[in-house]
Length: 322
Image (cartoon, rainbow, N blue to C red; front, top):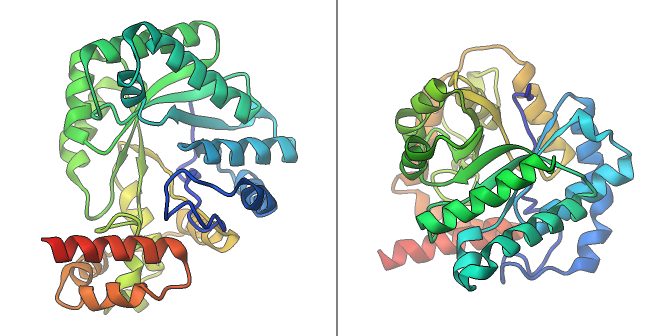
């Protein structure tokens, strides 16, 4: 599987879905469908620019990508799609053991149908650390192995926020072709505990959450500008992408992109050559965790984008509670 260095993540925080961030999972589907044409343009431009790896998590993301590919008439063989069942072990745990296999099969079929696809390239085990048990893991992997034999899945992966847990799972079972983990300037644990193992066992590495650090959901650039960035050939977000792709184990990074401007900036980062000045990223981390960070978070409460307001409020609440 030869994938592009830059992939396209599924999270679409900027689409006008007023209930998505206040009550997770509740989506105004009429509004969602009405905003599909812009997503189509992003997908079209991405494929035209050579992006061939598309990652989706929640069902609205699956629907969004499926509708775009169908509308654009994209040849399925030209791209790779990674998909997953959200919290499969939790769903299994809420049901009798006798229904576990059927739950996974049913969810997988729902994803395939929503994608308008006959197969998924990479089927990820989502958050194996959540409600894990050896029995659940065994049933899940058996169902995926069966789907692979039927041609519905090409490669088996895992998506996790816990690199140590994932590394232990790989050591015990050696069952993944691909893994996806958080990796950025702030979250570097995977580089030490997971990447060497993946290199040794020839497991592909996909990285997520390149921009939202040190706080979940808030791009680090919100804490800038910082001294020295004006002298870099890269915009701060571009610098972050280049820093991530410096790791030889990383095959592709999958940021969410909610506009053509974001897509173009990320594409430009891949084609540029220049010094990757880590000091700039270090200054951003200090700005985001230093004494002035709280005031900047308070200002974000007036941000025009609902996602920034939502996550800023959450971070401030956590700060008050600690």
